[in-house]
Every structure is written in C-alpha cells, then in structure tokens.
Amino acid sequence: MAPGSAVLGSRPRVGVVVGAGKRGALVARRAQNDDRRSAGLVGKAKVAVSSVALASVLLAGGAAHAELNEREYERGGEFNRGSAKQFGGIDMIKVDIVKEFGEDLRLSNFVQANIRFAKLRNANLRGAYMMKLVAPGVDFTGADMSDALMDRSVFVDANFTNAVLQRVVLTLSDLNGATIEGADFTDALLDKTTQQKLCETASGTNPVTGRQTRQTLKCGGNRFSARQSTPSRYMTDETAPTPKQEFDADRFSMYTTK
Image (cartoon, rainbow, N blue to C red; front, side):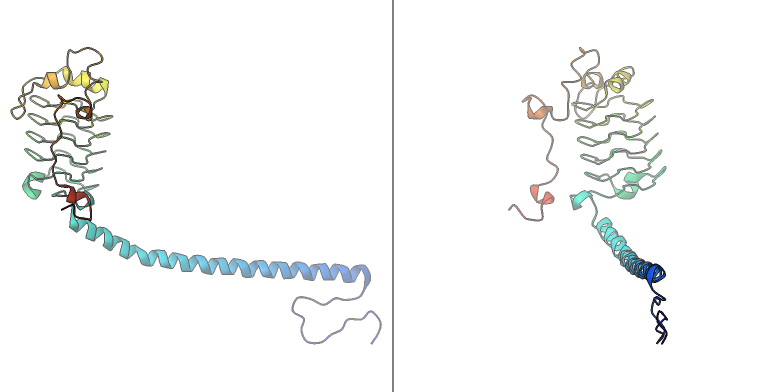
C-alpha cells in the first residue's frame, strides 16, 4: 500500500481521514463536527418525543378534571357549605332566580355571573359571593344581602327597595341609578363617592330592621362618619349589631365539632 494512502474497509460511520498533515487534520475536524451535529439532532428528537408524551398525559387528564368540576357543581355551594349554590360565570339574563332555585341562597356563588334584569325578590343572600357580578336592572326588592361580598360589580339601575345590606362590601361597584328606598346599609363598606351619590336619593325606612336609609348611609354626617362604619365594626364596638351565624361550625370543616 502506498504511503499516505487511505485505508478503505467497511463504509465509515462519519468520515475517513485521508492523507496526512494539514489536510488530514482538516478532515478530522470536519468528522468531529459531524459527530456533534448528529448528537444534537438525536437530543432534539428525544425532547420532541418527551413533549408529545407530556401533552398526551395532560390532554388525557382534561376529561377527569372536567368530571371533577361537574361533581363539585352537583355538591353545591362554596366549599359545600349550607344551602349555597354555584352560579359563578353563568348567564341568567331575565331569569326569575328565586322562582327556579328558591329563596334560600345563603353563601351562594355568583362571581362573574351575568344576571342582567333577573329577579331576586325577597331572596336570602346572606354571605353570598357576588364579586364582579354583572347585574344591571336586577330586582333585589326585599332581599337580605347581609355580609355579602359585592365589590367590583355593576348594579346600574338595580332595585334595592327595602333590601337589607348590612356589612356588605360594595367598593369599586357601580350603583348609578339604583333604587334604594327603604334599604338598610348599616356598616356597609362603600367608596366615599358612591356613598355621596346614594345620599342624593336615599329615603324611607327598612320594614325589617326599622332603620332609616339615610341614617344607615351616614348621610349629612361629618366627613369621618362614613369611615367609622365598616363591616367589622362589631369587633370593636359593643353597640354594633353582631352578624347572625348562618350555619354551625361543622359546615366549615370535614371534622365534626360535636
């Protein structure tokens, strides 16, 4: 065999070193680069396979997740407490909710629901979750909404005639055009501008509590009076009404206290 000639055998895997000196070194470097590129392609292929497998697992779990939500919905209520029902994110436009689901809606979840022009007359909504609720034109006449969370909601032109709204949270909510004759806002948490706007039309006396609407809103009081009225005032003021306990402690725990 002539000096410097290539050794030829079976087909090489990546390349054959031909010659010697600078040319042989150059060919060797090219072979090493080919090895690295091949290894990179294999690694990417493994990552792609792993990603597909992970996606398959997640998609397979989607049905189970949906089934779990359905079971939770059937159990009813926020944390399965009391008579509470789940209406979160549901459209119930112009629905007579009391007629369909009954008056007892304590602790029910209405978060982000759309209940435009619906009816909740004389409903028991004590402690209900009504944040980000879309409720323009809703009829809350005579409803007991004490201790409800109603912040960041829309109640434009809603009817709160003779409703009880003790200790409710109404911050950042829109009550423009709302009817509040005879409503009781004792210790409600309102934005100052909202309180002033409601005082422009506030009138009447609540038939259940016997309190005048203007007095519960602190209309005509000094600039600090509204700040002294908060949902938690009963914790520091012995003269403030104490919230009614709707359910016993067992409703809030998986372990019995009896």
